[in-house]
Image (tube, rainbow, N blue to C red; front, top):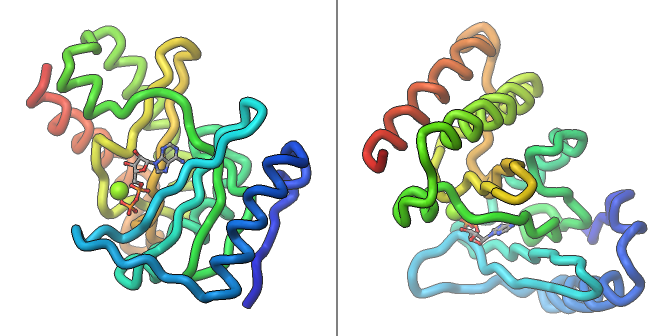
Length: 192
Ligand SMILES: Nc1ncnc2c1ncn2[C@@H]1O[C@H](COP(=O)(O)OP(=O)(O)O)[C@@H](O)[C@H]1O
Ligand SMILES: [Mg+2]
């Protein structure tokens, strides 16, 4: 298995392409797997050049089977998820670093009012709808995965490690959206 580069990778600047592919080639050559004492599923590295901000996510042994790559490939046309630039299955992925601050942090620091929260929820449910249209459901939802860029009024969802395939015979699209809506209301109610 080797490194796969998506079409979006070509559009990056030469500097970013070179720096990121050097890092990925090294990871591949040494088949490097990080080990993190806190039990994390991945090691995150920032790569930034020419206003291009990327994240290299390298899986630990624990995170190797996570579904990020498969989910990001299915959602490559959605604006609510990071752009995928390159990956090696069960090893690492290179993606867009999204703008904004996590909803968890915004709520803890009381930076969100009810009017804004309503707009965020609308976009969140759109993001859920786009994933559910590809039969993907996030079975490990967390407020720290929802990023809100207040200047652009744009939401993005990160960490697709637990975006799993669901079966329409068992769970409909409406079920998935309804569950996500209740989850959002309950989780945010503790702060507001
Ligand atoms: N695409 C991204 N854009 C911005 N920040 C990110 C992105 N991916 C990860 N991060 C940051 O790194 C942290 C850990 O990444 P995450 O994907 O949650 O790893 P894990 O699957 O190991 O939980 C996130 O909480 C976030 O702060
Ligand atoms: Mg996480």
